[in-house]
Image 1 (cartoon, rainbow, N blue to C red):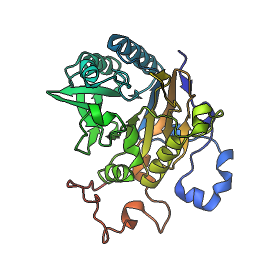
Image 2 (cartoon, one colour):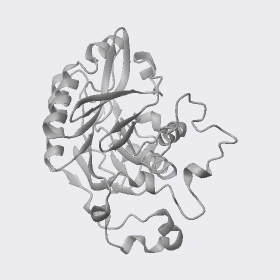
Image 3 (cartoon, rainbow, N blue to C red):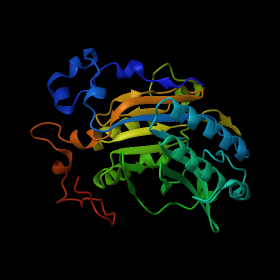
Image 4 (cartoon, helix red, strand yellow):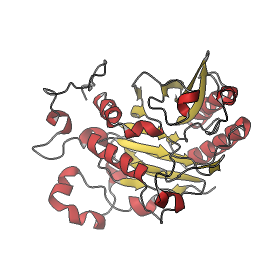
Length: 329
């Protein structure tokens, strides 16, 4: 597979908020200067492929091969789809249990861990997790030094509620490249989560996902670079919280359920810097020289507006009722 690099979108500058305020009609004609000014340049890859339900070894082999391709193309941070180890459309709870694996001791997790160490990369992969008698729709994060953490999907979609328990924790993981939040698919439909992760200091939110078409237009096929509803949500969440979003979707039709594809990488200004990917093809979507620290600097929109400062925490608390600590940024 030839990685798809977002050269068409990265060939122009991503303007700051103040530049947009004063000269929004000039953005498309300027040159890309991010690689020369990045404080923390990271190359992000979203791996889009078709996991197969009931074929765990095939899914391991495919995901590992694509991780290696992304790493060999220079990627530092690699995101895989939701439930990449198991497939998605289970017949019943017994099948879900038979395909779930522990974290971090499961075979798929161990192979991803080895690849993260071998290639000196970070990997976020969607994962059917078994923990004792409980099953979770999870995403696991590995870095060059090993296991970092797990996000368990908070907002379960449709029949997921028959197989999985919901997660109960919102985390942001500190890494050498920046602070990483994780969401899974339907999680992004709840803006409270992105806002809390941003308040807890996230620079980048990785989203393994299995987006499905929402309307007839998405089911019959989107044109070229046309955005799906899920893409707009990622763009909006990135923009209003000033964070990076990296969304890796799956493709294909599984037991009658079509999936959307359209993987996407969005910067803190809400600009899609890579994607959307196709609806039907395996792709490695790459955005190079992403300055993750811009999630901190771009919070100053102009002389009068700074997102964290402008929040009305006299009317609602910093973390919208979530019992944890806000990051001082």
